[in-house]
Each structure stands twice: as structure tokens, then as C-alpha cells.
Amino acid sequence: METQDWDSIAGEFSDRVFQITDHDTDGVILSTAQRLGSTLKHAGDFGCGAGAVTRLLAGHFGKVTGLDQSAGLVREAEQATAADNVEYVHADLARPKPLGFRFDVSFCVNVLINRNHDVREKIARNVAAHTKRGGPAVFVVPSLESTLRTYQTVVDCQVRGGIGRSAAVRSANRQAGEEIESVVDGIVSVGDSPTKHFLSDELEAFLAEAGFDVQSMVRVQFPWNQEIDNPPRSLGPPTPWDWLAECRRR
Ligand SMILES: C[S@@+](CC[C@H](N)C(=O)[O-])C[C@H]1O[C@@H](n2cnc3c(N)ncnc32)[C@H](O)[C@@H]1O
Image (cartoon, rainbow, N blue to C red; front, side, top):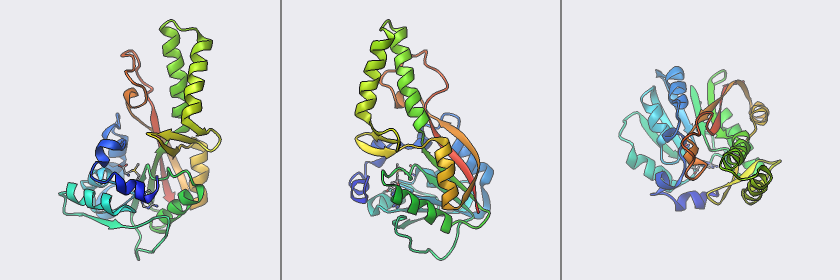
């Protein structure tokens, strides 16, 4: 989405946008914040949207700054935040404008999703420029493996329901054809918006280019009903997931 598109959903962001912190089944983002947090540390939440991640961080850090390109979303985040150790800044992360300081710990959750590689690269480099050397940075992104695995799971469900495998695969291929704009570039339509999805190896290489060493890559799992309408009750884990890469700024 472009800036004006994010602006246009300000006021209804929480209803219209998938916020992974609301669906993080195993609390992976929360436990990461707890582990990296300290009342002596200043955390940055890059691309904070309506502030869901920022508010989660507020309980674990001395100070938190949420940054977003959308003035409307910054206002929405401010209105929804009661914590007094949080501030919000209106900033386009693809047009670096030095803040004049670096964060102890940086979070960037589902922001590297623009279909344009240059925009994603500028945002990641800007996060690097504002993270202390050696400091932790946490990136969460949509997983392309998860998307493909979901189509395969739909096929399995249909076969279990009595549909022939070839017909089920043809139907899933049709759906994938409508939803996946580029399988090579990982561009998948989410709610009509072309959205970048990463392979885990790709994310590691991308973040390395931007100045980060990836230390771990884990799944942030979320429920099936976020991907499949009326999923069968028998459908359990592993559920769909985003990738969470925990890095150190080089
Ligand atoms: C999917 S939302 C995620 C919001 C939040 N991190 C969360 O997980 O709830 C993506 C956010 O990234 C912001 N964003 C995208 N490109 C940006 C840019 N160039 N500079 C600043 N914010 C950006 C959008 O305005 C939007 O608020």
C-alpha cells in the first residue's frame, strides 16, 4: 500500500488490517520483547501503524518511539495509547531523515511488505541507521512458505472431504493464480493489496545486505481462520505463520 492508502484506513486500521500481535498464538513477539527489554533501554517501533506493537513494547522498555509515514495512523496510535513512556513520530522511513540518535533495540513488524524492492531496502537500511551497533533488531514479515503450505493444506482438506486430488489441485492452482501476482518475487494479494512475502533464506540474505546479522528465525504462528474460511475443526498445528528474524546490527 502507498502512504495515501494507509492514511485512508486511519480510524479503522485495527478492524481492517491484520495485526499479528492480536493473533500470535504462542506469544512469540511478546516473549521476544520481554527477553530483549529493560527499563534502561529505548526501543523503536518502525512502521507502528495504530500502535499495537508499540503498546506491547511499552511495558518492557524504559521508552518506546513509534514511527509511521501515515499522519492519520500516528494520530490513531496516540489516541489509543495511555502509557506515558511512549511517543509517536510521523516519518517516511523510505526517505531517511536522521533522527539524531539510535535505538537500543528496534522492531519492524510487517512493514517490509511494499511490492517495490527499493522501498523495502530503504526502510531496512533506515532501521539499521537508527539501531546502535551490536544492538538487537527484530523483523516480522509474511512467509511465502506459509502461503504455499496453506494451498497444499486446502487440497488435503478437500481430498479428505471426498474430492479427487487432481480436481482439488486444479482448484487450488486457480485460486493461487488469482492471489499470487509473482511467485518468484513473493508478491501475494492480501485483502486486494499486493504484499511482499519472504522465504526464510531470502529474508536472511536481504537483512544481511541491509547491515544485520540474523541470529535466529522463528515462526509467529496464527490461527487457520485468518487464512481459510471456516477451517475444519480438525485442522491443528502447524498453523500459518509469519517469520520473525532476530538480528544484531553489524
Ligand atoms: C501492516 S501495517 C503494520 C503495523 C504495525 N507494525 C503492526 O504490526 O500492527 C504496515 C505499516 O507500515 C507503515 N509503513 C509502510 N511503509 C512505510 C514507510 N515508508 N515509512 C513509515 N511507515 C511505513 C504503514 O503506514 C503501516 O502503518
